[in-house]
Image (cartoon, rainbow, N blue to C red; front, side):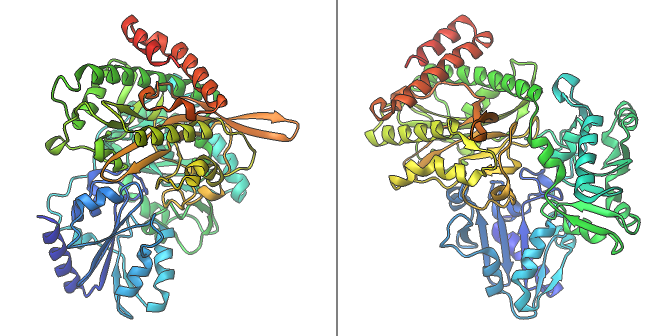
Length: 599
């Protein structure tokens, strides 16, 4: 079936159920950004392969939304004769709720999937539709039965991270969570944990349910003297179950989560995050409990990495940098001499990563864009139609990895041939923005949107911009995009609390400004940076420690455009680069690095 056939099948179902509109998302019951294939509903309908999208279908109209990272990709992948294409990052495009209100009849029926739609999003829809007196159908399961080849929910077994990598024990993490829980809601309260990244952090277990993140599908309920893990018990070995039991964590079947929640004792305070809790679970809670809504407690705890975790993250970044250096050397030797494609670049990097026994898996489908494809911000090449890489212009690669000691995210844009002055000017501007954020000092209490504006200010003054945040939080053997903070001026649906979340010591972010000239080329430079604290006579200030060390593209730098501070910053960065990476490189590789870091 193709997109047209999928729409036809949906509209037949709508007619049979007397439904006027269907609201589709591409998330799972845990509000994950990267989801197992079982929940890629919007992707199945539209052919879109990105991770952020919504679709609304009526009897005679259909519309599709994504964000600024995927706008150009959607134009390539989604049939514009079937769907009107919009971006939530473009203020000129209609809001999806406004569009829905204008295309559903008064007193009509709207179908939603309550098992995956978050409570907060459902409320937004209810509020937007209030004037239309809409009836809600919350179960799409009967429609989704037409997805006859729908993949199953993964059932692979779990594994335990070694103590040197977990750093903090389960008992320590539960103690910290319970302290936050008491402060948030008093004695006797319980909290519902829905995010998969929160679950793996609390349990120190990892799984294979996601192709990019080491997650397993589960919920947790934690109280003052109880901790329950709701998951498919077939995933858990007897030894793992015994270890969980010893730490006071008891297993409940995943399919019985709603049933358990419906039996929580009257008067109990239940702390939950409406942005992470699906409607189905929220509705399962009895009316007799007291619901306390607030940002997820676990997310704030795990965002602040301790000193030993940051040491491990440094090592993960060094291992990844060594693999990327081997990739860059391979590109220099191969491009123009052998036939390679964008897809080949990502596969080759995985070969180099596999040399480390600490490497687990990729943490993204490699973003590798040559020439005009690099202007598609999250362009991911497919083997069957990947562009050949030749000795001209720019090649951009944005690659993420999971190591036992941490999660990495970096981007480099390399010159494969002659560059225009415009290319060099753009690259230099991006490098300056990267250094601007990495070197910025700011007082305690500063939020990411302010830092995003500072990082972009010089670009804005030149009439340039990029449609994504300068930085996102990064997890620890977990999510690439981690909340609650984000360095972004725009509202980001995956980061609902970002504008109100001050940066704190130990938080880990990306630093990834870019410039994208559609149809021509794209540039992005990305390092990971950790928040560090320092005291001054004016109070507590914060700054960043760079975690990623790799050469920049000297052929693209207009040195005369750099300030003395920026030149010295690069030289210091390169000295640290040589120092940190020497143990991971052989003599030939290190000699190459030395030449690439002469500045």
